Image (cartoon, rainbow, N blue to C red; front, side, top):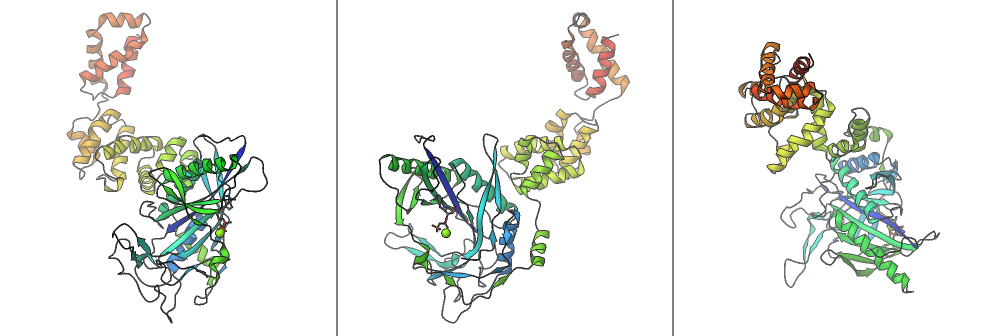
Length: 484
Ligand code: ADP
Ligand code: MG
């Protein structure tokens, strides 16, 4: 990394296009499914035939509102759509319906947590609704470009940040949080390789402390979060090198080459005037009432940030545990169901992140395909908490036994596997006597101050009980006898 951060300051703003999982397209009735036969989900409306009319899609607005509300945005009560005109083969109408002067959401922010532990709220400029273009395919035919219009007219939101991002790390974390959020809200699958979530990065550099931003360059086509970061880091260096050699940065659009890790120019920057935006005459204004906003709010699940706060403040979990458990909605929901049945917050977290995760990883399955319900795992934890089985037996024997026979109860499995602990005093007394008489010299050593030998005696008692002695009772009796 060759850039002199004493001398230069980097300014980054991101634009994220997010494909919404609406059933139908943004302004017409065709299905918006991914992977259908090319050019099978198209109609005269999204091909822009004369005399056809677009219409509003309530599901699309609801999904966009969810994202806006989750980011604490101001919701615009009266939105007009606009036409953004340009010519491209994948744009059959010759214009895109979007929101220009009246985006659905303005302001708001997304919270990120950096590797050094500091946090930052990345301010948003706007979130607006628009339709997607079709898809040009350049690598399927040697001589021709192919076009699939199925995507034409499907719903997008564009999330635009203020120019407040300072590093590739911050940009990567921002995209990570956006992806997590839209997945939690079930409005986008967040798949960057398939293009459901596409990030464009605007990058400029300026002398440190300067009041005016440098000329920005827009970089496109990063199909993963690590590539967003790499593209930005490359671009920062490239621009500083230009300034250091006394030249000027040229405003343009560049593309990221993932193989070389570099960016290359694809076109000079278009200006807004090139698009000749004007109000879309065929759609009535979109009017968002307070009641509509309330309805959407009521339909929203708990968000990762809320869950994180609840886990750390009310449940007493570590920030690490809370982070892992809120990484995705399935894990969080599973955990919440566990703690409903076994009130031991920490033990539930440990089980889910330890033995359960271990089993899933080993067998390469997702939590959603796991045979045991949250309640069944909670039952195992309760058996441990009630001293019915030991922690070791729970993890190594009962959990695996239950996975094999998920129709049984945890208690039944524990009984069949013969791991129910014995806390009967007489039984344990006898084992303690046996253990102590097996090591008379160690007993003397203990009495002379080597109290660390307690572990050895405990091990012996446990071994003689076949792992079934209640360790609490056994420790108590051992101590009493040794200290007598
Ligand atoms: P445009 O008119 O080119 O679309 P906008 O002002 O709408 O530019 O900004 C688009 C994105 O670029 C936003 O995310 C914004 O924060 C960011 N941006 C604007 N100016 C700069 C700059 N000088 N350097 C880096 N990013 C910038
Ligand atoms: Mg703009």
